[in-house]
Image 1 (cartoon, rainbow, N blue to C red):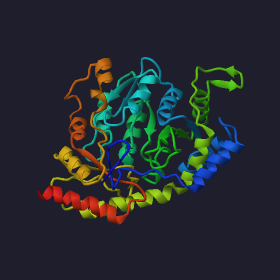
Image 2: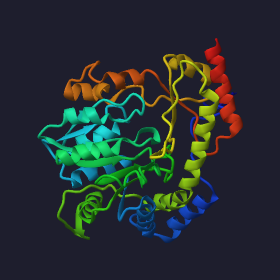
Image 3: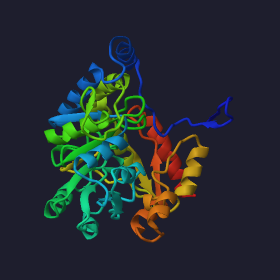
Length: 376
């Protein structure tokens, strides 16, 4: 572990993540800057077409962020003031914020302790006459139990929006996530499995009317160039970011396979440690993409400190559930104990280094140090 001479902080020998930006992406970015419109250029529409084809859907609409993709998808489904959106308290805060900014109240249902995804049986208990949509998250790249959620939604006349911001390319019962519900939404933030080297998002759907409405909403509510029939937003994806995304999209399946190989090696090397729970594995119906490799232990903080003292960067996703975030406590009066599984997991999870180029020797080093810790 080396010291950064500028900031005086320790540089990790094995980082938590390692975004990829190579020569092909650089050339694509420069070409877009030199030859395309900066906003809504040809690269944007090609990226949308290619992403839709990759996800096996008819339509894709790019946005300036994954959060905006979620918000506009909910609005396109008719979510507005007075409505409820049922979602998970165990995600990045943007999931619930999207419902809030669509005008609805986010209503939480606790998670399954094994998958970290929203528990369908608890979703059903949260539905009311005001519930307009269900917003499951495919957390850490592991698909939520969509068949159960879709059945609940159909029985209760609710829309469903998939938060796929951590799950590009994951498979659920033969379908790519995002193609299963009314709308699927993705983020291309730099930490994701694929990125546009900045903020960016995408909403995908097989419903032409929903796609058209999302497209209007992200572009100031335009009906034509100077005619607007919706109250929209300036939420477009920049052309240069789209150009980079097109290159990354070609690599995503290869990168996801490398992530699965890293996960398999972690599983092999860490599976014998008592007191350490590993992430849920895929099966014949589920193919995860390991956006993060998250272990669970009652000694989380101590393990994190030990690994980082040995040059291994770790993360906590997430240390505080959404309902206990200060703003949600202020807005809705949430208190500790309301979603016990999420609250307990927040104190146990630790994200280990995970990225496509993580070499076998790096995984072995991480595993060795974890074994050392638990041997003490």
